[in-house]
Image 1 (tube, rainbow, N blue to C red):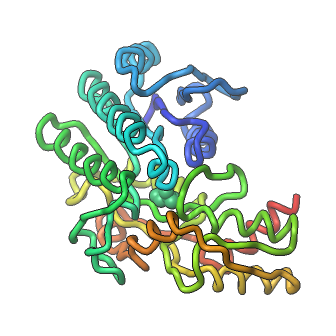
Image 2 (cartoon, protein in one colour):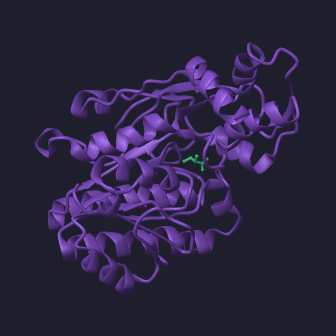
Length: 308
Ligand code: SER
């Protein structure tokens, strides 16, 4: 990675990834793009990812050698508008893969635990297993994983990807995900001392602290391609918990903190269709994936940063 174009640069992951990439590769080495304008400390262009010609022009003019394609709708938003989700998530991905083929770019896009469904083994979910998701987001993610494999085997595009779990960050509030409760709970703990969870007690999902997610992208992209057996959509997870466990962890620091439940049936159904805990051993074996943060250390850091 020397000259990197990032789509969805103002999104949940993109807004922190751009800073990390600029710190490693240089401010001018990263072209941030998004559908809306924003103040940036480096190169920035407006880009609607459904416009393939403009995407091609921007990547070419920038002299990019890498495409990191982040622009997409998350699970709960996609469920509200499935046709728009298909057009944006799949149209954007096809354009990004085509531009990468045309300009010979190394390519990254994230898949998700959302690529699994109710028939997937729920515990220690294997890297290679049944994938019959029941959400539009999941359908997009499975199709995306297959497309990335296809562009590698058919055209030799160096496509790489991971299945991210729920990502937790103090910097950017997420938008429209099912796992977002595990971000909101920290904000509300500090602001109001209590939280009403839309996910039911006992619902386990995989999670990861954002610094580990960003490092995973860099590590996978820098890994020796000849060692990658899977290339796309590596399971990665740092922890698995359910709402009362994260609440108990927060209570260690804010003893008066309380949690109530008012379950949202749509997001609960999505969560119920996803694994409890996935197996990251392929990512560990093939490119050395490692997470630094667990629930306890993430909670210390989140509360400290958010209080500021
Ligand atoms: N965090 C995402 C979501 O909940 C999962 O990929 O939609």
